[in-house]
Image 1: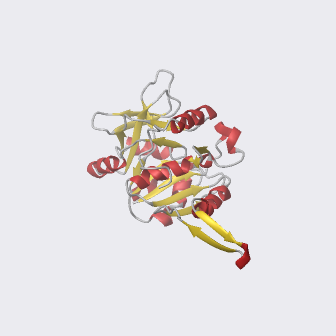
Image 2: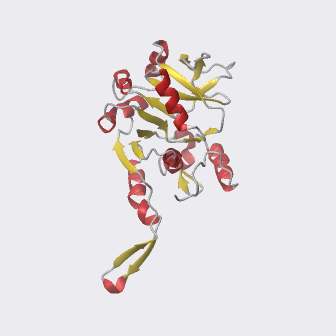
Image 3: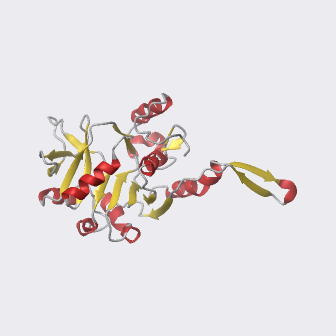
Length: 262
């Protein structure tokens, strides 16, 4: 299965850094948070990625173009016509497609634009600015068992986002904006979509979290996988600092892979 990552937004809430690079390229422990997300999926054997680019997309493309070189030992021999030899190279088992989905395209529009790269098959979908210790194979098993169009991973947090009303079976009955009294579960990303989702995406102006999510919920086609472990988005400088401290401690909860570079 392919993994689609939304990485095209402006990142205005963390403008201290996003004026220089896209939010998914802001670093935690010397690596873009996008890399951390990809390592999570790769740990479970999902290595084909489609990145929905937009704002400062060239930064993402250049980083991947240089990734192999930057993670290897290199000898430059200027006496032999500037010959370059790469030693002890570190290569991820990744196939990465970087797609220009437009500067001002909304989330639903970005997903719609990468359909040619997905084909008619289910796919993982997540945001490029949050990490978690989600059991990805368990979410897939949940999705395959219920047979609905969409699965989202639900998490609890001090609410700033749209609120989900989830019944005991896991079906999402409603998707709405939060109210002050809410303390419920939110969409933590780490989603799975069947190809029928594309019929809910009209054009570049479609905000995935509004019309399509609400319609899916109303039709009984949206299910929520309950994740009770770690989840953290990186929406502000304070949240970035929190993630940096966790990484520096050597006990980052989302770090499921064996070491930092492989």
